[in-house]
Image (cartoon, rainbow, N blue to C red; front, top):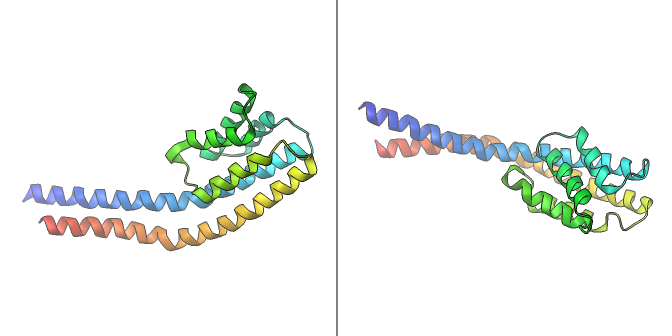
Amino acid sequence: MWLKLTGSILVIAAGGLMGFSLAARYQNRPKQVRQLINGIVALKSYIRYASTPLAEAFSESARGLSGVICEVFTTIGKFLRWEAALTPQEAITRALETSGDQLALKRQEKEAFILFGANLGKMNREEQERYCDMLMSQLEKIEHDALALRDQNVAMYRYLGVCGGMTVAILLI
């Protein structure tokens, strides 16, 4: 009897943890998109007003950020500083790859950021500023959609995890 009860509690806890971990990805995505927007704003000011080289601009932009996006910006700065033959697009691609599963961003945000790197450093400051503005407006739309998805799915995945665990526990008893 105690073995069944203990097993049921463990199954319910595992289902709940699975649901909460899926919900956490939906919660982190809007935060990370907002951090990415903040990083682009800082990068834009370093490019436009301070005329800072890209490697240093990415590293300095990371100072105002936190979490995984801070690490991404820092990594991009390191790649650009230590590997001179690397283009900004390649540095961004590598930095996104190294962050792996910690990043809650979806393909759409990653592709926009990588495309941003393709034109970075090849244009004059005014064109780069316009391109930063275009990326920020695109990311703001993505953030709005991510907030809607978060509100819709977080509670559902939490309940689904706990209820799924309960269902499995009942079937096992």
